[in-house]
Structure formats: C-alpha cells, structure tokens
Image (cartoon, rainbow, N blue to C red; front, side, top):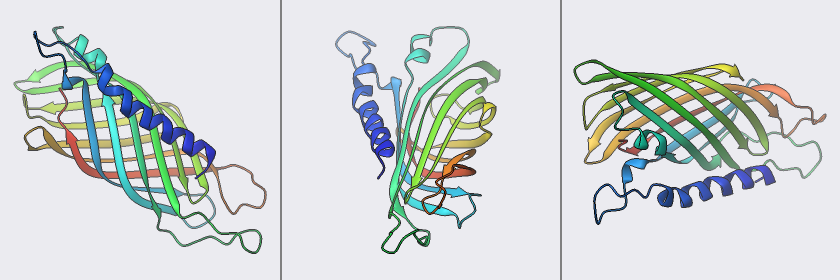
Length: 237
C-alpha cells in the first residue's frame, strides 16, 4: 500500500476512534451518550478505476463508514428539518482484475485495493406531505482509490437532495450531482430492516486524475472511479 493510502487509512481510523467522544450529549440526567450523533455502515464494497488506457482495475472487499451528525443534532429543535454528516468512508480488500505487465522483469502489481472518501454535507428542508420530508443542500467530498498501485484522486462539490418517508423508521433516498470540482454523481437508499438497523445500498462515480501503475511515463491521466456498497447502516436520527 502506498504512503498516501496508509495516511488516509490512518485518518479514517482516527475519525472512527474519536467520533464516539464527539457524540457525547446529555439527553436527560444520568444519560450522557446520545447515539443520534452517529451512524455507521458495515458491508460489501466493490471499487473500480476505468477509462485509463488499460483494462479496468477492480477490487472487492469490506466497506466501513462513520457519519457524525453534530450540527443537525444541535439544531433539532428548529421548525425546519436539518441533516448534516461529517463523512469517513473506507473500503479495503483484494484486487480482482487481471495483473498488468510491469515495466521491468520481476515487476509485480500489488494485490490489495483501497478506497477512501472524506467530506461534509449540510441539508435543510421540511415536511411536504404527512410523513414525507424533502431536504436539499451542498457538500464537499475528497475521494482516493488505490488498486494494485494504480491510483485515482478526485475532489468535488455536490448539490444533494434527500427524500425521507416515515417517522422513526424512515425510508431514505439520497442523490447528488457535482456542481464544482470533478464531475461526480451518485445515489443511496436506506430501508428499515431490524431494530436500529437499515439495509443500505450506495453507488457513485466520479471523474478524477489517475496514475497508472504500469505507465512508462509516470504521467497522470484522466480517469473515472466507481464504488458500489451493499450493507447495513445504523439508523440516523
């Protein structure tokens, strides 16, 4: 794994370790842990780097994500509906695409794959009909993917729409499209499953700048990254 991917992995783990402390709230006397400030995902992740002049670089593995919702928790008494998330999302696994030929005899392409997304989003809205609420807002995202030494970096500012159906156990559909930075779009759906758990599915794609492991010139080229996640998510507030 490259130094950059190791650094981003450490940052993700640090975010995960420090989030519970940031979520401490006294919702009533004697109870000072408010888990509404946190939501988490654990599941299957499949990432891909495409359009780079060589066969697609593909990985599959485990996805873990933590979202911290401090601002919307503080603003929960406002007459409007708000949602925010400080995002840390990591996928780690094995490269499943065929190996590329190295530049020199003995060169071997790496077998690991890594994806990280960090960002923030803030949305506001209101109920539009009964238990149905519509929110909209902006976000910021930094993405980095490393599959066997071929990397892709991207940064974007997306406009985000979020539809919530239901009260406590809500079906949530979120879609986003970049209006600044690298071209990017995606969608996510959460469906109530059991107790505080939801089934979740997410897919995004983004343009970015790629560095191909087997490139003789070591010149960065335009590329596209994709990620599919299927898993379980703890219920958001």
